[in-house]
Image (spheres, rainbow, N blue to C red):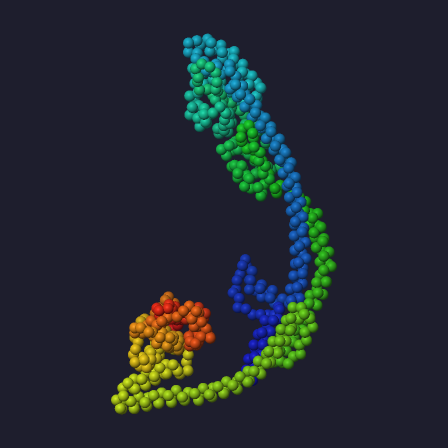
Length: 596
């Protein structure tokens, strides 16, 4: 009954696999993350009763969607406020941008009054080297009044200067030689075009334009306006209350004006726009200067009262739990009741009662599980009876095998007697055949063992070839190319013999012209031992090669060798055939390196 006890243990292991929530034992690695023992936590979860697992799962299914819905409502409310704030700020920034364009437009108009005033242009292009009286008269009657008018009408202007290449007498900060600014970074660009250039030098802002036109001698002349940036950008410091920032950037990406009320300053408009996920960022182009106005405000400064939403969410969750918890508890108990009943039945089986009456009363998953267990128990009973029968057959086979061991000894003794008789009458050819045959059968039988060394397998094959050479009156040649290092490894026996037999029978025996030749080689290819048997026979067609390793082939020995190799070593190893009509056939055998 020892075997019956073993079956009971296997049945118990099998039932554990079918029981959900059973205490399966695994050799888990002990992991700890953040001070939490994952092994202990996993064991606690696995050991929870299914009823409790279902109860917790249902609660999560209820609580999680309601929580997500509450958060979604809060997030949507906040996004709505952000959108409304964005619209309001966009209107404000557009208004500020229009105001800035107006101010810069006035300054640009001041430059136009010089550039397009032909009288002023003529003054700075005339040559007064012969008559200084006319120069003073023109400056006092034409230029000076225009200067005073522009300064009076534009309070933002702090400096109004004409830089001239003419020899006009300097006047304080209103008329200066152009050589004093020829080294400025903006000088070349300003002289290359007639457009207004808006310049930032340190904290100062200015505008410059080349004076063109007029008659007479032409000189290089520049009109320069320096203005108060605080006055220009005063509207950016009181847009809204709270934290916000404003940035004006010129066409080169340099900040012209920066204001940040309690916020970190951004070095460029691009840097501010890159933080659009955290800030409301509004950009507006300034048409007159080509600059860009950027306004930004943190989204978290736009608050939303979450108390109402949170209170409603918690109330909804509480009502749902109050109603559903009892229902979930009753449903969980009803669900696991049949599992408990199946579990009790399995315990009876593990104690040795294989004749339990199992009733399948449903078609759901638990019913299918019960049905599978019923089928398993029936199979187990059949297996139990079958094993007793197989034990009897096994004993009978052992007896027959013991009797069969007598035959090899009888064969070896008989061959040895023939050998001594042949030697006694000096029949040495018969003696050689006898010893070769004895050697062949000794390695073939190998005391009933299927695994032999490569050396013994090759010696067995060589013995077979020697017998065939004698029977063929040495009508073909044999070449051996064996790497000595492969001889110490192991393989299964009788792989090479059927291949050599086919090479002789279908190869050299069918050769019509010339002398037959068989080559046998053995070597390493990385972790593989490769044997090659090549003949110079007539070869075979592709169709024959496709069927030669099949069960239906006449060369059944090759099919048998192929199946044995794959069963013992795996599908990655085995026999391959290459042949060409009139060129012979090469059969390659690959097996893994195995020393034992």
